[in-house]
Image (cartoon, rainbow, N blue to C red):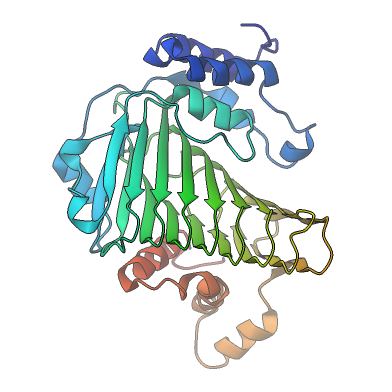
Length: 428
């Protein structure tokens, strides 16, 4: 228990859960847990946690979620209404009985019963060590070289717990996936996080992706967990020569959400898009972070991150682009636009650039604003109610990140989720 801060209750509970798990006999899992104990739980005195409090976690007793599987009806009820291959993980464990056969669509799956054998994190931090130490296994997904998959693969993460759990307990699940794209391959992957019940729960997740030469990946993350969920996740992308990687994250659920996206561009002539949309309501907190390293020249990257903050919600964005020496002809842009709805809504944003090479073109920017009264007046003058006008403006603000979704079914799913998080009437 060395390294535990006095009274650091969540850290102690995580350690007890780890000792009671099979992972305690795995060397790599032990190393991650020891690193977690050495670093301790961060507080707001640390720069990276200045605007995100973890006090919420101290209110709960952390428990294991159990090993029971839901019925097929639960999977069908939570599933996405779209033409796709669906594989299911329940509380971080692969559930073949609830999953489709991905082979015919060009994907290969392998479940590894203990964590390990995957790349180290690009930007490790405390909650990544927690997930790597506690995840019951790794779902390896492979797209063979020269293969263009004919359907999207939905990786459905279901968090479920005993309905008898009290509101003071927090079932803990950790899920781990690793995707390998072969040379000249192309695939669409959808991470979908859902809650079986309305009870509080804790999700830790990590997706790592190695994109082979001249491959193309379209990645979507749908964070659709219940309003009581706590969600901490990490996506890592290794981008090689001539690759095209498009990652879109829709963080639309959870009382405390912190999502990291990290990417390393390790080959020339690459295209990378990292986008996100968050919509915290009530007293929710959504913290989104990106870190992108241009390690080779002739790379093109664009980032667009939008936050729509309602009520007493808080959004945090921190993004960094780093251009290595000799990464000439790099073209990188990062934009964070924020819309505040409500007098107590808050957003904290910090885009950053670190450039160590000449002959590059990089920029970053951030905006924070409220709904324009002139826009409201224009719509109301045409017979549209004030509430409906505000909803139209919000949808228009989000459209830059929703209209680009090529699959109409997926686009409608995201739009419906946004609508559920907006009040039907009254003051927005």
